[in-house]
Structures are given as C-alpha cells and as structure tokens.
Image 1 (cartoon, rainbow, N blue to C red):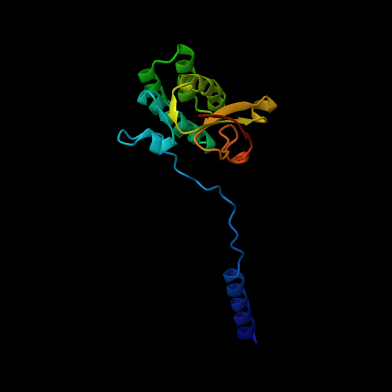
Image 2 (cartoon, rainbow, N blue to C red; image 1 turned 135 degrees about the vertical axis):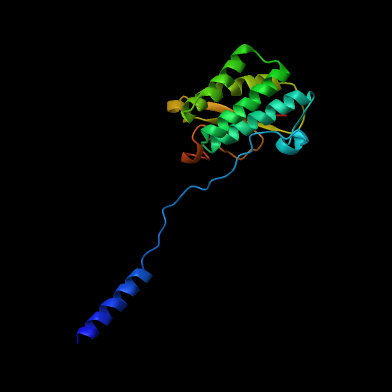
Length: 181
C-alpha cells in the first residue's frame, strides 16, 4: 500500500511539473537600429529622398537614424546617432543652437532629456532641408500628446507613424501633418 501511495505521489508530481504553465511575460521585441551611415550607401536608398547637396542628404540620414533610436527608446544608440549627426552638421555648417541641442542630446543619459532636445533638432533639420530636396517625400509628423499635451513634430522618411517621443508606449500616436516634396 505504501508503494502504491508513493508511486501515485511520484506520478502526480511528474505530471504537475510536466504540465506546469509555461507562460512567459510579454517582452518587447528588440530591434537593432543602425546609427551610422555607411559611406558607400546612397542616401536615397536609405531614406527614399535626394537632395541638391549630398552633405544635406547625409545629415538627414543621420537625423533619421537618431529618430529611430528614440523610437526604440535606446538612449545609448541615440547618443551614438547624435554623434554622427554632429559630424554631418559640421560638414553642412549649421547654426550654434542646433549644434548645442545635438551635443546636449549626445551627452544626456536619460532618453526623456534626449527626446526634449530632439524637438529643437527637428526644427533645425526642417529649416536645413527647406528647398534642398530634389526628389522623394519627407513626412512632417505630429504627436499632440507629447510633453504633457503640448505636442511635438518630427520628420520621417515614411508616412507610417513611429513616434520618437513615446517609443513603444504609444508607437503609433501621431499623424502626418504635411509633406515636404
């Protein structure tokens, strides 16, 4: 009788362990964001647009890489992308305020601070690309909920919304406000 109880206990234990609910917590998908523009890649192939001045195209591509790092809420890659953007800006010759905002973003360890600096960078890049586009479309996008419902803009190579101000919290929050063609 003891053997029967022992065997029943053993079998029950094995069934319980084997049937244990293996639910895993939902983990966000981690995607690699490329933060450097390869020198041999065509800017149009990366962003879908062409500029009169290839230096502006390189700066725009570096901006897009920064935006993607913020979309994925990756402060380390955002800092690296900001470093690349600083180099691109130096080649174009932008104003000191834009360089300072980019430096502040690069130096910040907090992604929320980086996102605040990104607002100024977006304004500067928009001014830089104004009238410089020869083909393709850039989408000016807007999130009304960014920064306590004050709203903020960003530029995108796609009309698909990928919000750099909220990342995966509200990835698709926003709208296309206008097109730059």
